[in-house]
Length: 413
Image (cartoon, rainbow, N blue to C red; front, top):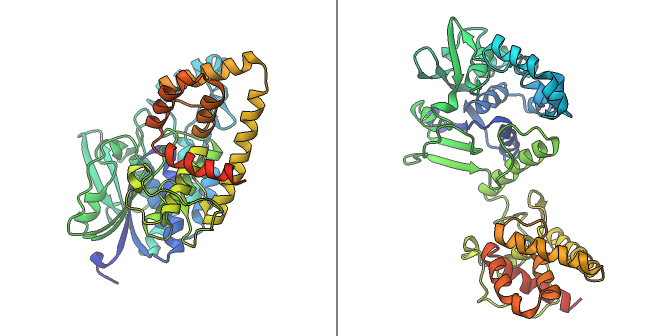
């Protein structure tokens, strides 16, 4: 067996259902052939660590498909609609039942989560795998953090300790041998130092921005890859199926980009030759977003800015050709929508202008930056152009370069 300082350790942060991101990270690591021999996690990170420590590459897929609100906590039927939290009339009617459950369990009943873990995590497989497993929890009796590894967990107690690490405040506190425990994220949401103290020097951190204590990771003296969700999405208990699928894909794409397998800043692009465009030469003196300042490919910068201006979906795997095609298609759609609005009734145009003005004030837009800019040009009086355009450009630093590129496309058909 190799020494710990020669082995990769995957550190998994807490963050509720956003922990689905970790499984995307893991998929990418497998694809790249990076062998991980230790898993250290907090809260949902501890649960995923236990899942992965079984050393079964396909074990997580059915786990993802099983996650829903009623697979985590037991709630009266009125509080659940299509697997998500509901607070409608039925919830009000079932409120007394919920209050009785809260009192009886001294928190939300997490027996469904226990059943979910029992269905997907096998302690005997973890112990037989030879993988290292570490978790963080907090002993409520002494209010002291507990950092423990697999050898510290009594036979038959691994699932108990995973539940203890994931006992979010408000959940029923797990009891192990007379002691109550709560979520480890209260002490350390990213258990990086725990992994370092264990002797690991080659580490991969998966950070999902969860609640709790998130101390700065000190990487000196180590080989550390730090992977953090590049797009802010959802809250820690989001159960929408599309969100779960997208956030897992984001973990996969972020990891590949972190390891240099993909290029891009706001987008995830396979390396390759950028297709030629039949447009006039583009200026190198254009203003670009700060993160693109050192990008050598001028056309790459313009492409990403154009995609952002059109709000091309970001959580996708593109090559340059598919991104270019997506830009052309969305540009045609936006122009058709603008033309349809301009030809419409005056009241409809006024309503669109009022929405745009309110959006500029609040910074919250329903339409793409390209659409909003074009509406300014087509509908607002010239006296209002400059002020509104400057406000829009301040909110969207990619606007000027993106518009330049798109205007050339429109001009040359």
